[in-house]
Image (cartoon, rainbow, N blue to C red; front, side, top):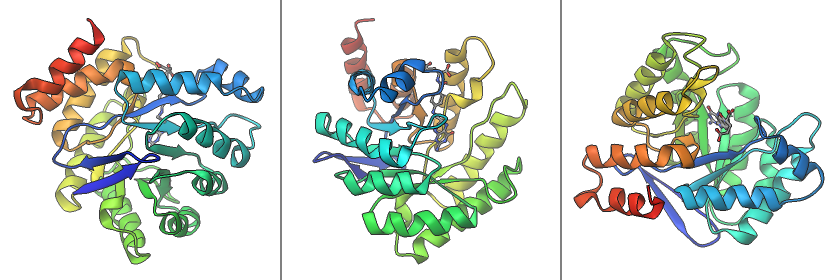
Length: 280
Ligand code: THG
């Protein structure tokens, strides 16, 4: 199954049978005080710097999240999206809990974006599915709903099924739903990663969708996050994760290695190219 996104002109295919596509996570105010302070001053140079460095490190898509306390992201998100698209031809993943911000960003964006995210709550489905249809955007379906987050993989699957059914009945193609099985901190729950891995298996088997997740969520609160994230990423890719949201500066070499090991990089061409480009 293939999900096609695009920037201003360039197309990107996310293929359930293809290599890992990296959605760069770094345009996110979480622990980035400088992003908040520069955005508050209306200075977009740092956001553009983060875009450039992530693309250079291997990002194929950029997640754009400008949510911080007190922000009017229905005003700011479209401004940041325009600034990025004026400078870079890369597909964007619009990350906001505010449907008005998503719609405002889609209005000014070019190409084909990914909405991050639609969940199983009625208000989310009602607000965002018509918007995705109208703007031809793909959606991330997050497996939480009015009952919150369950640790039962079958129930997580059922939420993704519901989101997919609602999208398809609104005229959105099934391949334009990307499932997020929810990656949670393993420091808080020792079984958190296994629940996510089992959900990935079920979603791949039953729905065949592309799969994303916040791959660095699992290591919150622990040291050596990079080793943990890498271990989890490779297991998840083997099970069907195709487009992690992660820090490309830290995850790209593991993603390229996983692709090679899984027979998705003939003659190790991408693996070697990446190695040479980084001058390790
Ligand atoms: N699913 C979906 N979208 C998401 C998430 C998800 N969006 C937000 C988040 N989770 C993924 N994005 C981030 C962004 C930053 C960090 C983690 C997840 C992060 N930053 C480092 C830190 O906090 O220490 C700092 C930056 C760095 O190390 O480079 O961890 O689950 N659909």
